[in-house]
Length: 339
Image (cartoon, rainbow, N blue to C red; front, side):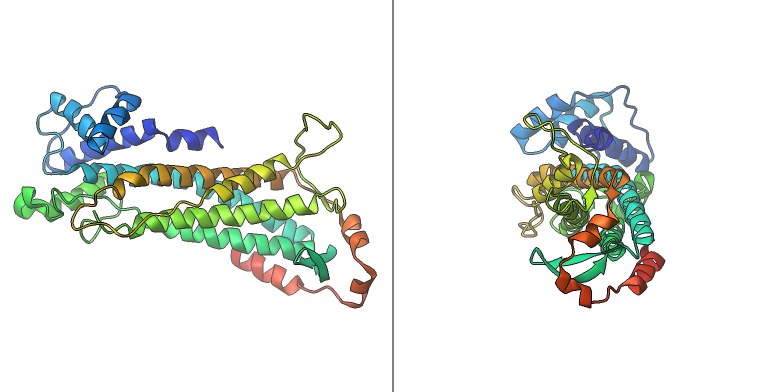
């Protein structure tokens, strides 16, 4: 997995995001929480397990610096907001990886729009197609998944004890507005303590990106089989068989996509769930990491991919000769819409 993404989705990043949320909350109320240095994330997370959330040990430390720290908020406000902050930076990286994958697909689609090959259904040769059209299909999948991820709303969370912001009196909506603006997050219509749709939407969108990239990588693996040999991906070595050219990066992409199976539950109790939101951070962190790994490995696979048009034509069975290849129009449409 990319080191930069692992850093953005780490416990250190999560604790830092909670601190950012607390500082923004103080500014939204008209004063400044001064925090010098960093906190030990491992210690915060360890202590947090004893009280069912990591915000409580952080708040204790912050109140030693400023008794007004965390004023009017509840732990879930800070945890949820930190989740959104971590997701925002991680999403930026994943979208960059997806853009590179899309660019690689577009280049292959344009270059190989006339490269005839066998289309395969149920892993058997069906009728002729072109490698350009196959790559155009990859492009459409990645671009549509990327658009879905980019559209997920990342919103600040601030509701106080039961989602009423009662601690701020009639200033509540204004504090929420200022808080969201300080963080650069969307201002929600109302607190979403037990409305987990946006978190589920984020994880699902990440799964789509991973799946779209994993599909490309799996196709590359199948086309690179010794008996097929229509493409040659960047080589990975074998410890036992020096002659092998393993599609290592594509394997990483497929494995990452298959790991992204976590889902967020939407059945939260009353005004604060008992165990549901507390379980989300590992799921979201894994989703960010695996989606990024799938996209980055697919990007690198396409960057080093070698295509063998002669082998593609030579592999076609005689039965396919009577079918004319088609699809150039769809290559143009894909490049116009997604390229």
